[in-house]
Length: 143
Image 1 (cartoon, rainbow, N blue to C red):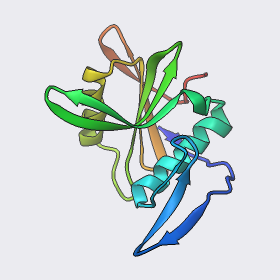
Image 2: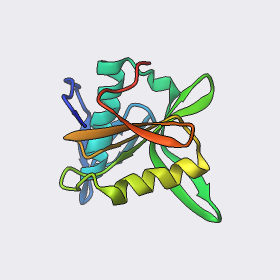
Image 3: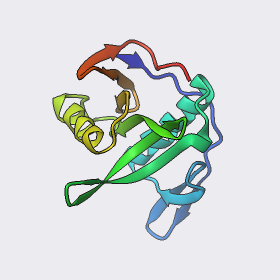
């Protein structure tokens, strides 16, 4: 398990009718500021500023198909033009349990990647998939 220490970032937040929105630097648009979105935006900055992951190789809310059902991965990171990591974000009060792990593993069936991460904004569990086995990592994979 990794304890998340977020970098400072000047988030742009504004009020709209009955809601707050936050500027998503990756998608380049305003999105509704929910507790999960707050975690997602902070984790994106953590990946960019603490681990040097390039924002140009990130997809946010990436749509995938699971059989005939459309789903969205919170964050997909690409390397050499191939999906490299899937990150599933949950709001801070959600436990990172087997249910969350199964969700990201299900996404991995449609979008195979060597690295998986689940986070609730406080902690992250990072996993490496290799030869059909899943192993927990103590740090984020190097870019």
